[in-house]
Amino acid sequence: MSYYSVGRVADLAGVTIRTLHHYDEIGLLSPGGRSAAGYRIYEEPDLERLQQILFYRELGFALEEIATIVDDPRTDAVGHLRRQRGLLTRRIERLQKMVAAIDYEMEAREMDIKLTPEERLEVFGDFNPEDHAEEAEQRWGGTDAYRQSQRRVSNYTKEDWLKIKAEHEEVAANLATLFKSGAAPDSEEAMAAVEAHRQHISRWYYDCSYEIHQGLGEMYVSDERFPANYDMLAPGLSEFIREAARANAERASDISNS
Image (cartoon, rainbow, N blue to C red):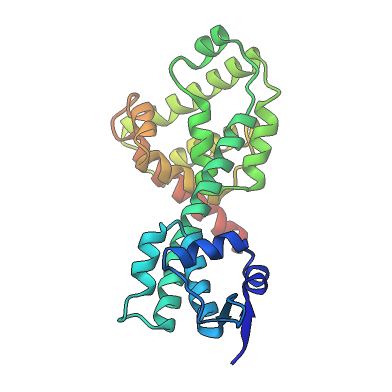
């Protein structure tokens, strides 16, 4: 069996000698022996216990809790490793979610719409475009489409936004008229109208593929903000747009594969 001085253990573990002395004083980690001169001598089982202590310490456990955990006679070394792996995995998941949340916030803030508060109110009313940009990022995070949209909108003037708003209102009104007329979502008229919707997005925001357009259609139904906007024109319009976008995408796929 190998033996280690307190200084050597401190170097191996990346802790201070003072920390090891403290662990000894509170009974958390007492060395297996003493030298003839009375110095602490650590043995291999002591190092294994120290490793467990440091794992749990890194995971945020208090020393009192760690003492209870590592002294549990029902848990062996493999059991500790399994527990530590599970705790680390959950911590990694939480940290990944935190990083993702920070990324979304950074992306949203980088979407710099250069309008005064008065101009924003005139163009958007109580609609917040950043809310939907964040939703798009959550669904297609890090895509070229999202970055392309950010680059474009950051340069738009008030006049651009008013033009975009008018064009969108026209596209939405055409879809609503077709829906109220009883047209089927897979009719030629409905697919032409929803294609105009896709082209509107591609013209002003990003290259909206048929796949992305289908995803937007799903979001129009699942995200309560969108039904509130579209169904105001005609109850059920958001679902009509979703089905028409799906039919339009399937038709485009059939054409490309023929």
